[in-house]
Amino acid sequence: MAVEYITGKTLYETDVARLPEELKSQMYGQIADVYIQLYRQQFDHVGALTLDSNDENWVFEHNRPLTIELNDQELCGMKSSEIIPAHRTYNSTIDYTYAILKLVFNDFYHGKDSVFDEEDARNYLYGIFASQGIVMDWVDQRDNHGPFILMHGDFRPPNIFVDDDLNIISIIDWEWSHTVPPQMFVPPSWITGQELPAATKKPFDLPFSFYVFQFQIASREREDKCHNPDKKLKFILPLVRLWSRYLRSDTMFVAYALLKPCYFGNVYWNLLDKMYYGEDSGKRVKSFFELSLRKKQEEKLQQVLSNLEAFKKELTLAGLEPIEPLKPPTLNPAKGKDHDAISKASKGVTLIQVWNKFNLKEIVGIFRHWLPCSLVGVSVCVCCIIVKRRRLNGILPSGLFASAFRRQ
Image 1 (cartoon, helix red, strand yellow):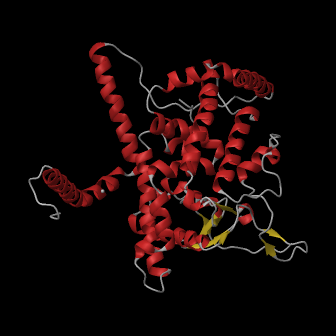
Image 2 (cartoon, one colour):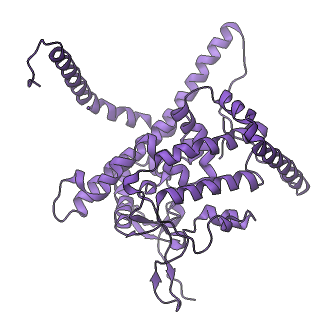
Image 3 (cartoon, one colour):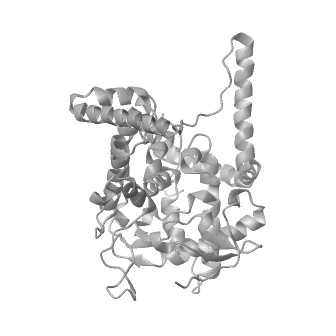
């Protein structure tokens, strides 16, 4: 077997989010190039490329979108191929996202270590049911039937080769490539320096959104500079238009969760639950399982907990420790003045951790440039409201003037 040798190193040990501004801009531009070119590869259904019957040419016919998560479930004996069979393709975003939600249910019911304890299990199962309405509402009917866009499928730092100056030389491991709905064609989450369970935990979602926004700007400039021969206005370029619609915090986190079904429950509980349903999540979970029609879910939940205990015993016999949920840093409780002092110290520690982890000095610096424009915009809006109200009151004439973390 002949294998091509690639000179260089991978991005594996490079923290892209904390690179010097010039190098980060260069890296963002190159990654954006990949996405711009992938965006041009559009198809009429969700599926994957495969070799023809002679194993000579690549064709796009009836091959399922085989993802790493789907493959992992199959290897673990969870029978994910019964959910997405080998020749299953999808002609709509709704159908494909519904299949992904089935994979999330499959993870809960059949994953040996899908939960940590009973509270986590109840939250996870409730979250999957509650998220179904969110996902169906998230689907944009304008793009429901495509076109669908080619995605790498495993676009991570270990698969990206660069030279000493961080110029991308090659991208490997394309065997997981498949097409996705436009709403799921989002920048790689690793450019933020965090995995989804940690990145979507408050307050780390703010830096996550910031780095995605930075990448969006870099992509816009790259598309305008290198992929705009007709010199169109940059704001009407294809990928610019797509991401201006879908890279908003209320939509993009749903996309990231669907791309990583194993993290779906984490993203739901870190952000989506409160974003869509508000406070009192504990009361909602309790009410959900008290309904008589949830008896079947209660029975399955107890079976999941029974399987968890059996799995822990297997680990003990093998001399292994079960994975414990990660918890945020806390200080020992105290009383009176000591308690107040520790509370302040705890807040300070959190702020310092966030500041150091995400280079918030850079983030805050950008707001300094936005502030004058924001104040002008607010002033104009206020003036328009005053004018409108006065006109309605007859004062002005008309015509003078819008994880892994525990799920809790």
